[in-house]
Length: 156
Image (tube, rainbow, N blue to C red; front, side, top):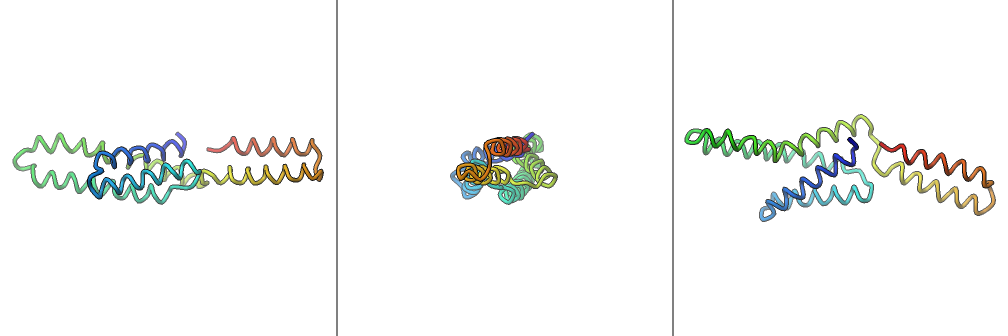
């Protein structure tokens, strides 16, 4: 699985959760960070810090929500708690697991999404300028261009 795919799942999940709880401040929080992750992915910008913040809040809301339900219902309706706890785990655990996967992948390969693309775009424009100024030959231009394309394709 690619880092972009994992981050996209987290962003979409946050948008959906924010939309479902949009009438509260909590929903606006999830919407804001979900939109920020989505925008960063479109612009090829790193979104590690947003995912870390969301991960912390998903853990907090899981334990807070399940704790409140346990506190108010466990003595009278233990079955209700047993049914609701897995639902909370799915709602808040899924993006938490994806966040952990993303952070592991980021730790394992710490390049930003757009780092190589921006580097290659700069090199393409520089290479084109050198060719247009007749400083390098067409053969040199094609060889360098091919190596840059290979670098750009080998992104995680």
